[in-house]
Amino acid sequence: MRILSIETSCDDTGVAILEIKSGKFHVLANELSSQVKLHAKYGGVYPSLAKREHIKNLPVVLRHVLAKAKLAKQEKPVDAIALTVGPGLDPCLWTGINFAKELAKKWDVPIIPVNHLEGHMLISLLMAENKKVKPAFPAIALIVSGGHTQLVLVKKIGSYKIIGETRDDAAGECFDKTARILGLPYPGGPAVARAAGGALTGKPAFSIKLPRPMIHTKDYDFSFSGLKTAVLYDFQSRTVKVQKSKEYIRTMAKEIQQAIIDVFLLKTLRAVDEYDAKAIVLGGGVAANEELRKQFQKKMKILVAPKELCTDNGLMIALAGYFRWRKKKYTKNVDHISAEPNLRIE
Image (cartoon, rainbow, N blue to C red; front, top):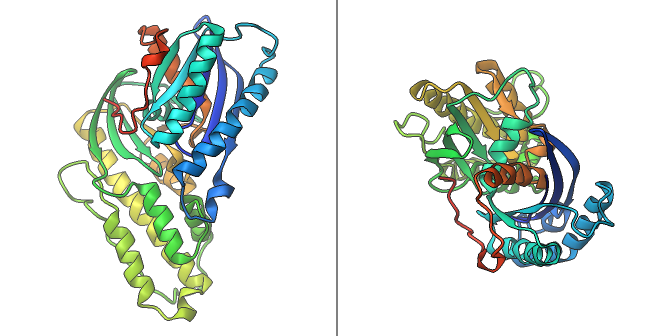
C-alpha cells in the first residue's frame, strides 16, 4: 500500500509518500517547506502567518512529491492519506486538514488521523541512526521540541502512557527565549548549540551556574521557566560590554545547554530503572542537538532518528499513519475530522 502524509502542525509544510511492501518501508518522497527564515525576524511563529504560508506551500510541495514518486499521472496515486490532527497550532492544523479532505474526496481514499507526537516517537524507533539497536519494549521516550517536553512509557507501538511533562515552558521554548536574551537568532536551539560549540581557551573569565529546575523531584515532570528567568537576571547584572562579549555568550550558552541536558539525563535514566525499560527513544526537534545525543549515548544505547528527521516532517506522520491503518483507525467520513490542538498521546 501507499500512504501520502500531510504535516502542518506548526511552521513546516511536510508531505511524504511511503510505500509498504511485504512489511518493509520504502520512502518514495519526503519533502519539506520550512518557514524558519520568515518567522526569524519575529523571534517565534505567528500562527496567522504560518497558516497563509501553508496554504501557499501545500499544492507546490504535493506536486513535487507526486513527481518524485512518479505518481503524478495516476488518478488514484495512494491508498490513504495520513494527516496530523494535533497537537499543534489550530489555524495551521486546519489548513492541512482542509487540504487533505479535498484530496481524499478527489481520490476516494480514507484519511488516517495522526498524533504529531506519536510521529516523533515512531520515526526514531523505526529510522534510528544506530541500526544495531533494535526496538525493544517497554521503552522510555523523551519527546522534546519547541512546544512539547514529555517522558512517555512506550509499552508497545500504539500503547503509551505519559509519565512526566513540562509544567510551563517546553525545552525548545526555553532555548528560544534564552537565545533572544543573548541576542542570538531564532530558532534558539540550534543558535545556542552553535554558540556553545568549541572549547573555552584559558581560564574562564565568567563563572556561571544556572539552576537545574525540578531535577531532584520524585516525579518525572519538568519546568524551564525558572531557568529562563535565571539567565535573564544574570544577563541584566552584566555590563553592556560583557553582555556582547563572545566569551560571555559562549559560557552562558554552554551552561544553558548543559542545565537542560542534566535534567533530561537524570529523569530519563531514573524512569528507565523504575520501568525496567529496554531502550531510550529521543524524538522532536531538540533531539537533533549533538551534545544531547552524545551525552545520552554515553549512558545507554538510544534510538534516535537522523537529525534532519528529528524536526517536523511528513515521513514521521506516514509511519504513524501506517500503524493506525493496521488497527483500522481511519475513516472515509472525512467531514467529521477536526483539529485537536491539545491532543494527548495517551
